Every structure is written in structure tokens, then in C-alpha cells.
Image (cartoon, rainbow, N blue to C red):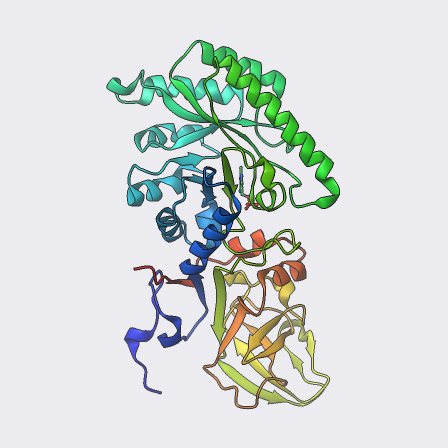
Length: 399
Ligand SMILES: *Cc1c(COP(=O)(O)O)cnc(C)c1O
């Protein structure tokens, strides 16, 4: 084989997959599809509604920096991360223009947060006091009295973080005594926006939120705050409640959560491909892999693929629970998933399938949603669960 080294994609590189030679497991992130998905959401919203993109957990495992860059080009208004650490590389790369919210600011990171203007979610009175204290102690002298943007979280029914209506009074009290904390937005998170059977609960959350937001605004003497409630499934199902902004996560990455047809225009952003590194033919009765769990019931062609549970290919995908797509054929796993490899049955695939041929682990033919089902979890966990050992390449034709 004539190996052209320059065609072997490196981690983080932008490639055209059709020319790239694949020798190992590679996750491909299609930024064109990401931009398409953002456009799909924008087309369903009022032109004045802002969009926030969740790029926490390294952009749901797809690479926060490249994802954020492409979304900024696509006209996203806000970014949000979970932790200050996640915001630092984004601020450094993107400059000061785009506001970045930190949903779960660690109090020990406040100084770093102030230095690069990340905007904290404020979710409890204790946290608000510590934030105020730190603003007055750890900002450069000349900035000490300059109002700092915060985003007030209401607990309308998720019961994770946020102010209840009674706790909100303590916050408004505090805000009356200082100008250093400047609320920019007020928001809440829906806990069952994807669940038709629970729409009454969602509507009650929306109502509770509106009362709290009204209360906060009137305590701020009518200063208006950005209001935002809807995540992906909320945006799809409760579009009337888009208010001033929506917060898009999983849908931007092209994954469906409600399956009512409303998401059919979305395109998958992440696909995981590997390669066949060995093929052998075995008689019926042969057993494959650890624990002899893969018992062949017919003469079979068995291929080995270099992806295992250490790559995020969950052990529950083994023993036929899922399949890989090989040259137009779905080929089930055989036996237990190993740490670094898994075997698949390619007996039904075309006879000319060879060592070196590409297999799709998930992507256009094997939906992430199907892997999630096989593993008894949600697509979020599959997407964020691809391990850092897997090389990631980007498809981006925008420039
Ligand atoms: C993660 C997150 C979202 C996005 O949820 P998706 O279901 O991925 O769209 C929205 N809001 C908050 C507060 C979140 O933490």
C-alpha cells in the first residue's frame, strides 16, 4: 500500500474525509452541519429572539473551541459553559465581543472569571454574597465599583439550582444595597420539556418563572432583563415561550430528543468511524472474545475493529446489542467489547470487504440515538462519552 503520510489526519485537523486515509478510530465533526442546525433553529424563531449555545463539556464532546468559532460566525449571541476553566480558552480565542455565561461558577475561580469577563449564573443568596465580596476584593482597584453582569437563575421545578419565589426576596434586598451586581438576564431550566405527558408541569414551570421574573424586574424598578427558558426540546415544543432568548444544546449537535418530526431537518454533527484491522473466517461453534460470550451459530467472517470501552465504546454495546455499518450492511458486535477493540460479524457484508475498510460506529447510518437505547441511556451521554484518546477531525468548508 502506498502510504501518503500527509493524508493521515492529525488530531484537531480540518480535513476532507474523502481524501483522508484512515488507520484508526476517528471522530469527525462536521461544522457545516452545525451551522446548518443553527440556521434551522433561527428559522423557527422570531428574528428578534437571541440564541445562546451551550458549549459545556467541551461542546458536548465535539470540541468547544471550533464549535464556538463556527457558531459565532453563524450569528450566535451568547455562549454558556459549565465551569470557569471551560470559558478561559474560549475567551482567549474569541476575544471580548461574545458574552460567555458560566452556569456553575466555582467560588475559588472568581478571580480568573473576573479577569476575562465571564458572566456567572447566580443561583443562591449565599453564592451572591460571596460573589459580591470577591468582586470587591479581587478585581483591579479601578474596576471595583463597575457593575458586573450576572444571570439570575430561578428554580421553577427542576429543583437543582436557582431561587424560589420566596428566596428571590433576599436577592432583591441585596440588589437594593449594591450596584456592583448587575442582573442582565433572568432564566430557568425546564425539567420535562421533551415529555408530552408532562406538559402541565412544563406550563406550571413557565408560569412560575414569569411571576418570578416580573417580581425581580419590578424590584429593579422596571429595569428590563433578558428572559430565557427554553432548551432544545423546549424550543421545538414550546416555541411561543421563546421570550428574549433560547438556549440551544443537543439540537445544535444534530441530535433529536422529541421525535415528532419537528427535528427532521437537523443534521448529525458528530460521526465516529473506525477501520477493520483483521478478518478471519470461523466454523459454527467457535467462540469469540473474553468470557467466550460470542458463540457462532454459522460459519462466519469476523472482523476486528480498534475501538473499545476505553474509547467510550460502552461494554453494553457488545454481544450483538449494536451494529456497525460496513459497506452498506449493518454488522452486529460479537462477544464482549474489549478495552481497545471489538469484533463484528461481517458475514452478511459484501464479500470484497477488506482489512483497511472503514466502518461507521455512529453517524448517518447508525444514529447516536440507537446506541443510547442499547446502553439504556440518553444520546447526551453517548456524545460526551467519546474518550479523549479518539482523534477528532473537523469538516469545515466555510473558508
Ligand atoms: C445544558 C443546558 C441547556 C441545553 O439543553 P439541551 O437539552 O442540550 O438543549 C440549556 N440550559 C441549561 C441551563 C443547561 O444547563
